[in-house]
Image 1 (cartoon, one colour):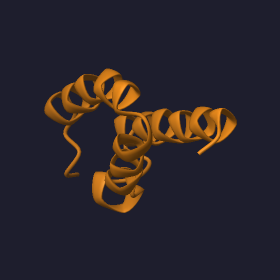
Image 2: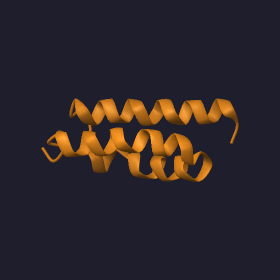
Image 3: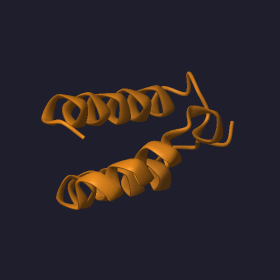
Length: 65
């Protein structure tokens, strides 16, 4: 995966996290899990950076509405 593709993947993940926070899309429907798994395979350091934000979002937001 190129640097450009990696930056695009990070942007997509962050965009989906914002959509989940604002409840425009559910966690399940967003497909963010697959994107996170892809990120872990290609750049584990970036995955470790994003994962705490992801966990915090899931814990704080009522994502099951």
